[in-house]
Image (cartoon, one colour):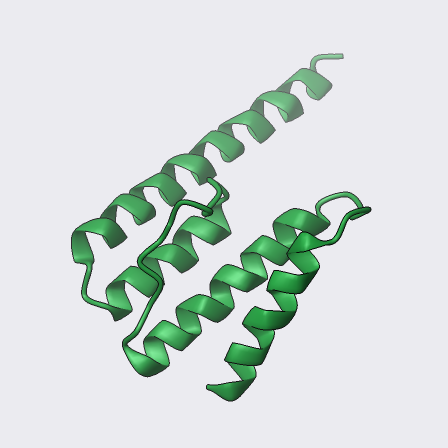
Length: 104
């Protein structure tokens, strides 16, 4: 558990830094949410605040894991539905892009 608590601290610090490249902010947020979810799984204690959670698939999935660990199943279902919706949207967008490139 200590390693995940340390990871949360490191990712919180990284999140505050400026000058991130490409998708680094999203990667940091995803890893932070995964660390928080793992702490919740190990301890049964999770963050009640989901206000800083972005709509990214990975973050919503990790949030759902955290909610499951603390027994908030209806909140977990909402997060999983949001994750599924986001992944479907991304898949459809990628398919449209591929189809457009084939017709050129």
